[in-house]
Length: 251
Image 1 (spheres, helix red, strand yellow):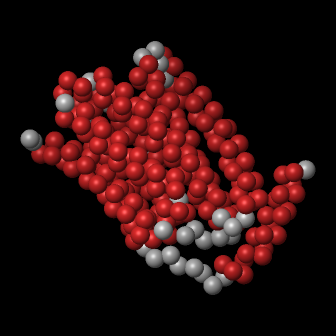
Image 2 (cartoon, rainbow, N blue to C red; image 1 turned 180 degrees about the vertical axis):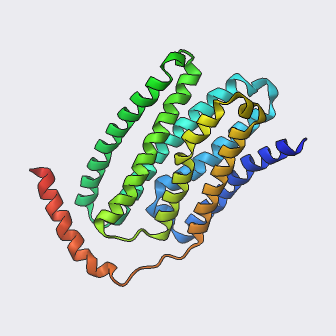
Image 3 (cartoon, one colour; image 1 turned 120 degrees about the vertical axis):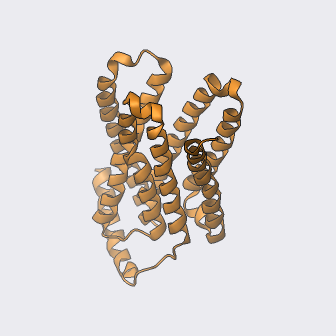
């Protein structure tokens, strides 16, 4: 085993083992109740890693089966990340069911618009080479990843609009997802270079970024939640704003 192969295996295995540590911390602190989709995402990522690693160990199954499982696991991860974004978007409104529903409708509309716009843009760039079904599947996945970058920015703007400070764990989830999703198109662009692809640099960079994202989740899972003294004072204003928004939506 050469040094590059060792680094590749480390960057693939280590972050997925750390996902278990993040999940255990969430269980200990009861955070899995507040963020059930993110908790499910951690378990899904670990289980799909176990399956992919088992396929990787069998050279006969490496080519066709590995690619299919990898594509479906990526699609599952993206679907869960959309759910995580909704959790982050609704996190400051946990005690206001009407406002959570209104926020969910807003997020769904923005999500549809972003996905359509990004899909059209990326589809136009790769239109000439979309005949291969597997490659087309990866292009769709990257389009959805790009749309999630816009939704992550919306999460930060949403908290800013409400005038509420993000809790450490919410900030950590958003930051880690931002690192992984925002740099995904950059890694895909590097993969277009034949020389870099032969050296395996795009794959190593992708796994290194994911490693950093998991470390961010682990750090903020360990961080203590700090409740500001002004949060209770802001609650009546938030409820009044929620009532106003509800009247506007129902008109």
